[in-house]
Image (cartoon, rainbow, N blue to C red; front, side, top):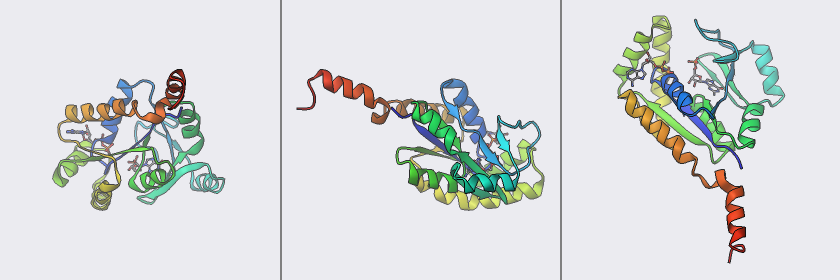
Length: 205
Ligand code: ADP
Ligand code: 5GP
């Protein structure tokens, strides 16, 4: 039995971190894949919890050794998902959630067909701008750059299995939780059990 792989992507500021925190509180057995990145830690971010913060040469040597399931450059920095972590947990039947950008999502979907990709959209551009400013994490020029990137990111929505328009937070949380609950009923999550049941019927007629 393999665990499900959930991919969560969104333009920066759409509310992905907020939704992910709720999801991880509701589903204690979900494993969050901590990515590697070359970007600087922001205030309050912890190494090994939010990201594994690393330098460019170390990251690139991991690329050379084939240690990433996917990796991409975002806003001049490198980000990647450790293959070993995903394999260890999904291989043991545990569900894994990835917080990755649209380039990474495309790579994972091409390698793992059953991955369940969810895209979070803000209700409008103006609201995205308002949220980024209200968060007060970055200077204006960084916010402007993130808004520019968002304009191209949203065009990738068609490659996702689910879209959540994050307007009223409580509704979005409910939708995200429903997606993860439905994922538990996917056939590949129950392969061993299904085979036992079919065997108890004397096999397939
Ligand atoms: P992301 O991880 O996508 O960059 P965050 O989760 O940090 O975004 O959210 C950006 C800001 O928007 C935060 O201040 C957060 O509290 C707020 N926010 C998230 N979801 C909503 C929502 N549905 N309505 C209003 N504000 C929201
Ligand atoms: P931030 O710098 O705001 O934490 O993240 C910037 C973007 O990088 C977000 O879209 C986030 O989802 C994405 N990201 C984080 N980790 C990874 C990863 O491992 N791979 C890829 N491709 N993108 C990532």
